[in-house]
Image (cartoon, rainbow, N blue to C red; front, side):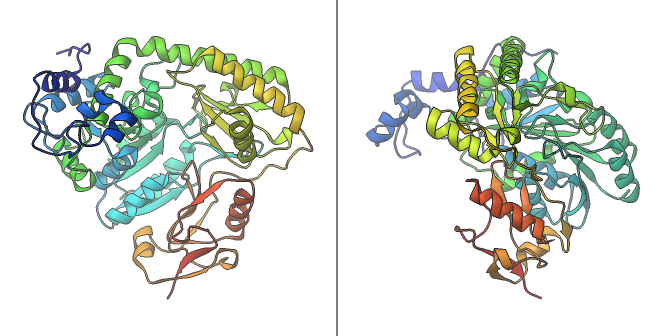
Length: 483
């Protein structure tokens, strides 16, 4: 039976709770903002009123039977799934729940090496064993691509006992693998298909967008509604197809790591984002695509910049491309993506989503407008005139193909000692080191540290990238395994 997408059950229950002048003798202690005027001044009286604790009339996210459960069913229908879970610990927790629900200790999961650190963290928690596939690489742009269908097929045939395959849809730069074909192959071997769709919420609504994972037969998808769907930061959704998945077990896994004090501000934002997308999402996403295409055309007119487009599609490692990721190679200008991000921020008050050694990326989504697009274009024209210099050599970006020595879990819990990162070549890492964003590890626990990885981190740090992952906040030392 088709549900009424015009309602927002969590939001409506919260409004009634406030309208009834319900007296709070529970937590949170600020008591609708009255106990902390500074907080009320910061986020507003209305937000403080809506920051409440679970109760019978507004349900409980860890065991929903009322309005939250109703919101989950509406979310599932809107995104072509059988079930949905509202996540308030970010898509990190959704990715980890997928992997923990699919794979137990010692079981294999096939995944591309350019995964977000949340996936590798899930392997540390669960004890699952990674079987990495190196994604395709575009050496002219210095980016990793999707997984080749042939590589996936070969890896599955070599590891028929693997429990699942993990896919990114899309990558940070908008690259999509051939998910439909990968799903077909994986299901022939009774493997689950799990998709990190953190940057793909809008796929389910745009007329010219790539397809979402649930539409292509995936078993579970993790979506960051806050990234391109209009909800508050840290709010996400885990989608499930029940054919091969026990949804009740998935909820049990979620409850291992997700907070028991779910923020109703985040839950309500998910409820309202779903309603808006269900009612107006197609028009809004189509408008974002139009703006992105306009920006792409205007930036091409400037010259020098290489703007990614659907021309990249090759049917395999780039089966489709998300044009709302305004991705631009700046090597011809003589700048790195790190430097471009710094200049745009410091001199033009423009924030980008991500930059690497060769490229930068802006997300075009629901709230963008023509005026701001024109300001970005004008800034890029000005930057070219001011800063253009000798072309930079393309630097391999995003991830370094690793040599895995031990599993992430074994490495994380092993005995370790710090050494200077610049002197760590050939040693086995006991922790992560990465540029953030995007949070794709250059080195992960259990991997042998290569000279290539050391050189890339040194270069990235010198160009202004934020380096994270090590216990040493100055990034001078890295923990390595002691045998």
